[in-house]
Length: 184
Figure 1 (tube, rainbow, N blue to C red):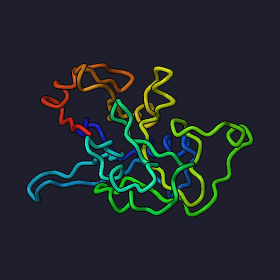
Figure 2 (cartoon, rainbow, N blue to C red):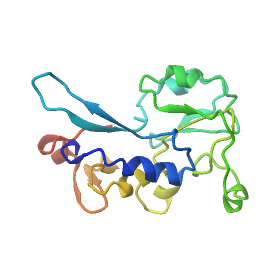
Figure 3 (cartoon, rainbow, N blue to C red):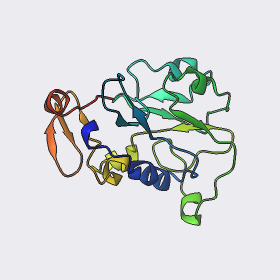
């Protein structure tokens, strides 16, 4: 609901914290947009769009980037060779390259790697917004949704016509039609 966004950036900080990202690494970006000089500007939170036909999947030479059956696009950092073809192929600048090793707690470093967890990417690989599949498996919302104190970001299934921001559950069609909603 773009009318609610005030650039508080809590969606970004919660995502960074839960994905062990550095302060300069952002899966979610909040952009100041203005569609026309006669219109008021507005804030636009922008994660990866998990495209219907993702160019990043098509250009990956080692199949490290893949699309799950439910539409979520993930990266397997054990397969990623760091060629950055996916970075160049993404029309939305949704990917980040890991130039430096990330320091993590002992608890995280002992976890078995899985592309569907928030374990940090290895140096020399690429990562991006993953819609927090580890949260979804537990019936929880992505961290950007729960981190936003304004209730801007709704998450759900367009086929079920239901979305939620954690506090409010509404019809997807209603938010698009009546509340300045925008579909990722």
